Amino acid sequence: MLLQLAMAAGAGVGGLVIEWISLSSITWIAAASIALAFGAVHLSRRMSGH
Image (cartoon, rainbow, N blue to C red; front, top):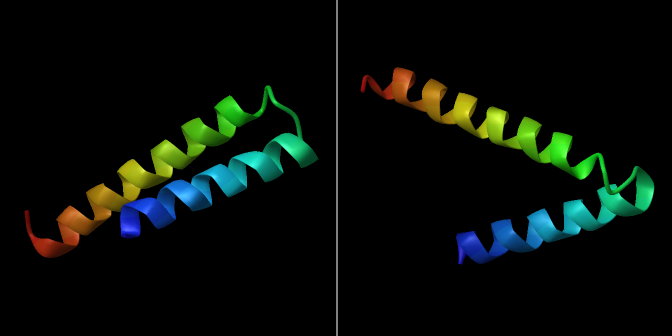
């Protein structure tokens, strides 16, 4: 269920970005989101001791 919510949120954010900013900026926003996700995973692993 969490995966479906994440996909719906991503589609919603993507739609807002296209409407408010531009279609070409969606690539940069996606790249920044992936970088934040990798950072969160790295931080989570450091805090759990793995």
